[in-house]
Structures are given as C-alpha cells and as structure tokens.
Amino acid sequence: MFMGKKEREPFPAAAKTLLWIRVLNQLGAYALAFLAVLTGPELAPAALASFGIAALISRWMGAFLLDRMPPRTVLTFGLGLTGLSLLALAAARTPPHMLGAVVLVGLAFASSHAARNGSSRRNDAGGLPPPCSG
Image (tube, rainbow, N blue to C red; front, top):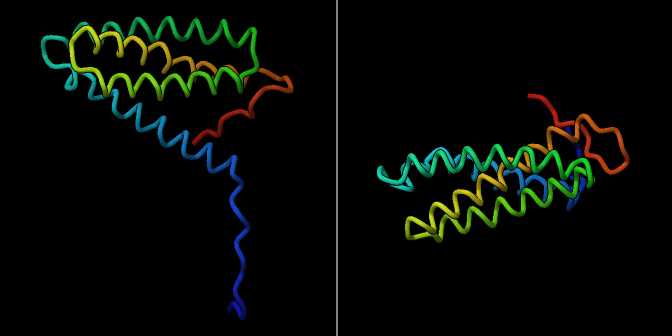
C-alpha cells in the first residue's frame, strides 16, 4: 500500500509532440482508405491510380533525399507535407483540385515512410533510432 502520493514525472515535450504527430499521421492513413468514397464513383479510378503512382515516386524521392539529408529532416519534411496535403484534400471541391490534392498526398505520404524505414538502416549521428516492432 502507498502511504503517500507519488508524483508523476513530467512527460517530455518532445515525446508529446512525437505522439501527436504519430496520431495525426495514423488518422491521415485511416482517411486515405476512404479516398474512393471521398472522390466519388466517377473520379475514384483516376484518384486511386494517381495516388499509387505518386506514392511510388515519393518512395524514390524519399530514398534520394535520405542519401543527402539526415533521416530526421526527411521525416519531419514528409510528415509536415502530409499534413498540409491532407488539408488541401479536405478543402478540395472540384475534380481537378481533388486530383491535384490526391497527388500531393501521395507524394508526401510515402516519403515519411521511406525516411522511417531508411533510418533503421543508417548508422550515423543524425539518424533516428530503429522503429519499435509491435
């Protein structure tokens, strides 16, 4: 039994920030599952194909950037662009705007994944620790 109150150690600000970024990133990934519903039946095939092609290009772009920049910088850049592009997708109202936003989401979305995956293979001072499996 505890006889007194135990004080909690404060959660580090960097850990709180990382937690919120991961939550927002996962919400964005969840929202992408509804991309076909969002764009409608006539635009869905073009939107899904555009996203897939942009995501492939983004993987290559992320690997290219990882060769030239620290993983933390590429990851931050990718996550920031993912958030901005998801906001653009939410604001898009016309089919051309939707397709443009879908391409931006695809380009930004996979680059952060490339940085996370590539950072576990790098062993330099600027790298991130390997991701936890689970």
